[in-house]
Length: 135
Image (cartoon, rainbow, N blue to C red; front, side, top):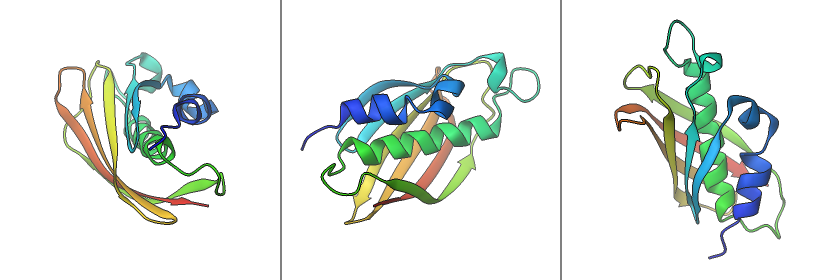
């Protein structure tokens, strides 16, 4: 299976919002990516706590990247998140966050991803199930 590394790094992680947040691609494999959200004051809410919206954005970018990592690029090059659930498990405080997104079901147009977010110490911060539509 071909890995669309350039698409993930250039178009998804390189998109304006992901760049604004400072998201970095650490690993790109077919149907699996690992992205990092570096800790900095601009992504916090109160004190050193990372804002839930920044975490949700990291989840969405990670799921999108996982879907496109092995998508058939000869088909329609469009897609969108059509839903996700997000459970916060612990406060993210003063540490980088790492999202690991895995496609757990790839259909003709609908993909489902499991996304786990942990801090740089390995503490589970959030877990999400994301549904994405290609085409």
